[in-house]
Structure formats: C-alpha cells, structure tokens
Image (tube, chains in turn purple, red, yellow):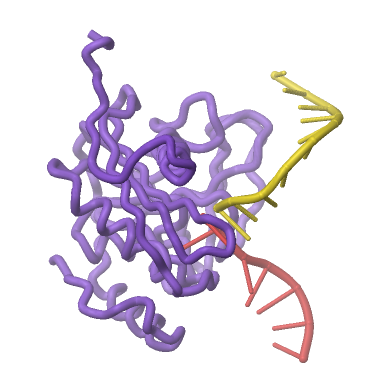
Length: 239
DNA sequence: GCGACAG
DNA sequence: ATCTTGTCGC
C-alpha cells in the first residue's frame, strides 16, 4: 500500500502529528526480508544553524561491496521544529523529494534515526516506509525510547531494547570500545533482519556505511562541494 | 510532578 | 543537528 502525503507537515500541531503516526502504524508491515539486496541507500539531512534550510540526500551503495554508486541531493526548507518523537515531520518532506528523483530505487534504505524503536513504533524509518512502500530500517546514535543493558564491548555484541514488554530494537556495538548504535526495523523487515543487515553494512567505522556516507554527502552538499540533483558516480576505474 | 528526550 | 580545539587511543 502506498499512501500519498496529502497534508502539509509544516502546518501540523503535535496532536495532529500524533494522530497521523497512529494511523500510519496500522499499515506497518514487519515481515521477513529474505532476499539479498543488490543496493542499499543511506538517507540523512544536514542543517545550517539557525536556518530553515535543509540539505537532504540519499546515497545508493552497492551491496555487499558497500561502494557509493549514486546520490540524490535536494535543498528544501522546514519550519516544523525538532521535537523528540516527531523527527519524521521535520525531515521526511525533503528526503521524499530526494527519493523521488532517483530513477532506479534502492532495494533498501537505512535512516539516521529509528524505525519501530519509538514510543508509538513510528520513527522516521517506519514512517517513510509506510508512506512509500519502501523497505526501511533505522540506525540511531542515541536511545530514544525503551530500556536496555549495556552490550559487551566487542564489535558484534548486542542487547535488546524493550518497551512495555516487547523488543523494539537493539543496542549494537559496531566497533570495539565505542558507544553502541540503536538498530530497528522500519518497514517490510523483521527485528532480526535489521540486526543482520546493520552488521553486514558495518566496516571500520561506528556508523554503518549507508548512513555514514549519507551524512558525508549531505554535508558536502551544504558546504557547496556537491550540487543539487541526481548523480551517478563513475565506476569505470574500479574495473 | 519528575525524568527522558532520534536529529 | 550545528558550532569548535585540543586531546586520547588504536
């Protein structure tokens, strides 16, 4: 099911936003994603301090190589404030524009934020997934909701994050002796799928390659090094 | 009322 | 998130 955003997020009150999240939640699907993805995209936005301007983008990586092969950048604006639990209403409009200008959609999208690891199980990754029908997952750098115990200090160790008696994600150590990241499924995958994919997308850094690259590209866009639009990266020198 | 609180 | 310098560890 594909839901077309008919409302202007900038005009919403928190109460109205909450109702939308509850509505979207009824369309959430967390069924197994058994295929091996061919491409995985990372999505993120970069902001200029004290500005309503947002620099949004997605970077498409090959899988399992995790090499950037294309990116889509869009400059937009938002007045919806950052409110914990409502990040989607601030970032999704811009990310949606960047997603729409990608000719061949990635098999999966990893967001800098949460999926169901959210009080109403509707973090930005789940919100975007239900809205577009895309397969999504979340990877946040800090805990938003639930409780957990610190996982072991070695890469690959993890502990569940629970809320109201259910597992809503995992605290995953993606590198030895660094703070864990918080992984959760967004849409069209299970908790286990999100954990497995996060580890397979992790290399030498704390953040998995998709979101790490997305963060890098939107920042290069904001500083003027990259331009708006859809771009494919030359890969001839890799053969 | 108090503490928590993605980006 | 963004603004910033040095500092610590692998």
